[in-house]
Structure formats: structure tokens, C-alpha cells
Length: 397
Ligand SMILES: Nc1nc2c(c(=O)[nH]1)N[C@H]1C(S)=C(S)[C@@H](COP(=O)(O)O)O[C@H]1N2
Ligand SMILES: [Mo]
Image 1 (spheres, rainbow, N blue to C red):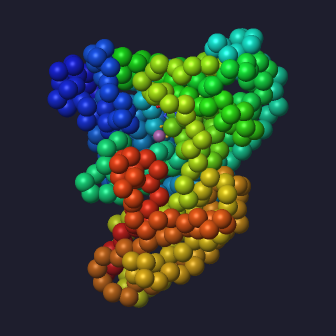
Image 2: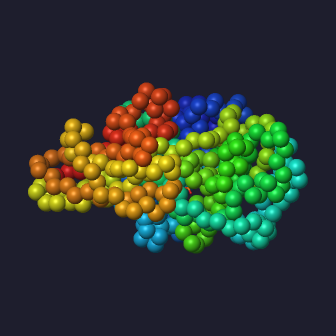
Image 3: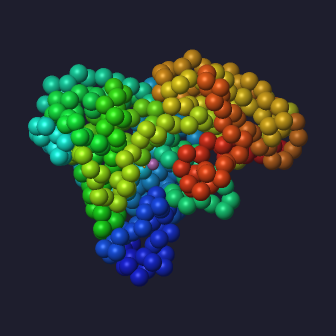
């Protein structure tokens, strides 16, 4: 379902929608005549399949915003990565074009580029070395729809606005160096192909600092889990920045600008983006929230834990609100930037609601805070990793 609302209606109801789309923090410019957006419709019980995807939790249908049910996060095809068909989906575009790999032309320019030029995908693949990296892609505001009452602003996500995949592509750095970076370069801006839901800002741009983009990790990816990237996840070319939150991982990149000045664009915001490392986080994937367990019978919890690439030392589980913790069994790491799967056996002793807390600790001693901080709440949970926020609620009979 979708609808077009006018400016007056936008003022009445739309600002909430705008906030729900993650544009809170920006005042919509006076030119914003229309914003094309459906109502927030998240219902964890209602799964909808996009073409080529398995049924996911539909948070919005327009623009497409779908979260992965936690039991599907750890996939089968490239264990423990998420299957391509189950990887979560998040767009601000009202119009998402289908671009075939041989149709893509990537333009590179900007006032701080020495030799602006364009590349076809074939030229990119011939010119630059291919590399792969497996990484967790975590939306900011992960789980924000379930961590706090009253519900925080922004997209009301559950826990599944995160996934893991192996991305194949070419280092951004190599492409920037080939074009030439002037000394006054401050930021790199990435533009998507589609048209956004905001009439005042139809182009979708995101920016990263030049230093951030000259690191070896950021990739322009054209492959996912040894196959093609699904349209919904940004085919034919997307930015991937391992270890960093994924709002800047622009999908369907068609233009890159190396700039001396910040770009004026609603979505890019006034600031130069990054670095923005993923905070240490853990939660239970199976059984799913709400599952009914039998008192006295053993159940295996399986979950994930991840950070920005520093490394995990342990994951612990508490059945008594954090009074005592038991260590979970961790699987071997798959890669520095990917989650680690862990397991833990529990035997519920009494009937009723059961709240399970999990806590990951890094090799540097960094751990998840028990509760959300004021700063977390003020920022609408944009980088939330509180233990109580990711609690799992089960029922026992
Ligand atoms: N073109 C485009 N790229 C985008 C976005 C978008 O709205 N449009 N959203 C960003 C955000 S906020 C997230 S969390 C990730 C989601 O990637 P996914 O849809 O592959 O899960 O894409 C990023 N790249
Ligand atoms: Mo996001």
C-alpha cells in the first residue's frame, strides 16, 4: 500500500512518518511538497516475500523495509552467513530501477578528483584486483522498536535489521587512487540510482570522510555469498564498509564524488560520515521470541555476537536478570567482521514468562551495558547495544 500526502497533511501526520524513515534530526526543507510513504505496518507475525526473497517481517512496503526473522539470520548456504534470500532490506527510494550488470556506468568526479571519468562494471573488474570480505551489515537503530517504552523515533525495527554476508568486489581506495585524489579532498559522496520518497531530495547521497574511504576495507561490491547481489540488496554495485554501521553502505551506486566541501543533500546530512564502528552486541536467534518451552526440558539457545572487528572473548547468558551469568559455547570465528555463533543449554524451572539476557565481551574488555544510556535514548537508539534491549522473551508451560 502506498499513498501520496500533501504538505499540510505532511505537517499533521507526515513528520512522524519522516521520523520513522530515519530522517529525524533534519528539518524537512520548505520545498518538501510531497513525501511518498506508506504507514508503519510492522507486525512480527506478518511475513511478506519480495520477489526473490523468502518471507521477511514487513516494516514498510513503500519504501521497502523488511527485517529478517531472527531464526533465519544464521543461514545454510554459507554458514554462518545469512542466505541471500533472507538478508534484510532497507530503502528510502520510492523508485528502485533494475540495472543489469552490463548497463551500469559508474561516474567518478567531484572538485577534488584529478581525472574525472566513468567505468562500466566490466572495466572496473578488468582494471582492479578482486577481493572478498565477509561482514555484518547492521542498520543503525537496530532493535529500536523493541528496546524502549515509549517506542523511540525512527524505523521501528525488531532485532533482525542486521545480517551477515560475504561480499566480493574491488577496493574503493584503488578506484579513488586511479582517478586521483587532490590534497584538499575532504569527503567522498556516493549517489544511488533511484528516486527517494522526498520530493525535495529525490537523489539519495551518503558521504564518508576521505580518510575512511582510503582504508583498505571499503569495497564496491558486485557479488554476495558467491552469487549475484539481489536487487533488494543493491545490485549491480554497492558500497560495503566492514566494521561500520551500514547506513552509508550505499546500494546501486552510480556516481562517486571526491569533494572538498560537504554535499548539500537531505540524506547525506550536514556532517562528514564515519568512522562509526559497530558496537559489541549479542542476542538469541533461536528459539524466536515468544516461543513456548516446557518446564524441566532442556532447550538449546543459539545466538550471534559481533563487534567492529576487534574480537570477542566471551558470551554469557543470564536467566536471573543479570544476578548470575553462565558462559555460552562459542563457535570458531568465520572472519574478523562476521558474527560468531554461540550455543547455550537452558532448562526452565518454573511456569510463566522467561526473560533471557545475553552479554558479549571483547578481547579488549569492552562489554555491553546492562541498560540504555541517556545518550542512547536521545539519539533514538541509533547505536544501541544494551543487554536489556536485546532480551529474549519466552514462555514456559
Ligand atoms: N540506495 C540506498 N542505499 C542504502 C539505503 C537506502 O535507503 N538507499 N539505506 C542504507 C541503510 S540505512 C542500510 S541499513 C543498508 C541496508 O542494506 P540492505 O538493504 O542490503 O540490508 O543500506 C544502506 N544503503
Ligand atoms: Mo539503516
